Image (cartoon, rainbow over all chains, first blue to last red; front, side):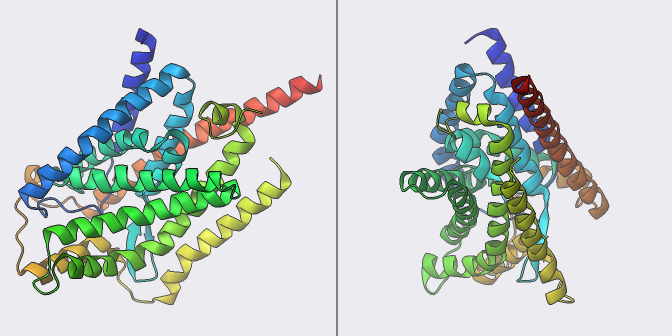
Length: 248
Length: 106
């Protein structure tokens, strides 16, 4: 790796970090201090291999073509805009979207995990949102599980030759929803109900999160499609570099 | 940009806007609080009075919660920076395409 590329990686990380400084308050990350210690450590350990592969994947992609940084920055910026918007939902409460679908579609899920964890760390420290003790669990749901689902769905639909825009929509939407399903299960594992155990708790948490999140997931899908349409029109070269568009 | 794409984007934006605005009018008087507060309530419901065992570092430092107005300022800054980056890069893409198209014509 040349010095120049190293610099770029550091820059991209600094960029992602700079965004994380800003708060995100009503979001649905697991609150600081709300997970027992064993769970905090467990989820953290699970995240490590994903983060390592994410780091190497970003490194490789920038090495392959350093122009990839433009779209990487764009994907990062998209996450920050999308996740800063708290939107009223049909259930009478507010929530926000994750915005990780775009990055997952363009760069693969592991690369997004790096963007995600940096945002979560800064939020936890500076904004009292999410938390340091729950960082592992939140990283797993927002920066790993969601993007992996987005990516999987996108690849699958591509193989099935579904219309590309429909695939983008479904990938972003289901990834967003899945993030909150994982959060519910994580909370349920830590707080099994006295009657019915983990499953009953999971249903309870899902009952709160899912109806609120569903319309937002749809909105996220729509917004991701808008960005992709625009990029398809104006940034074909970059999209070919990321393998999103086939080489003509 | 193709005309068809422009129309599609406009249509999507209208749908999104409606999806955001309609709950506001449909559910008059609703609180629209954050759903993670609802999450904390369920935790309490399930396991009795739950005392979080760790408080956010920032709240420990300033001895209290982040004031609401400061919070909304931070939100705007976050949105602003993100939009700035996207707009800047998009602007470059758009101009580049114009320039390339022109070059091809000549």
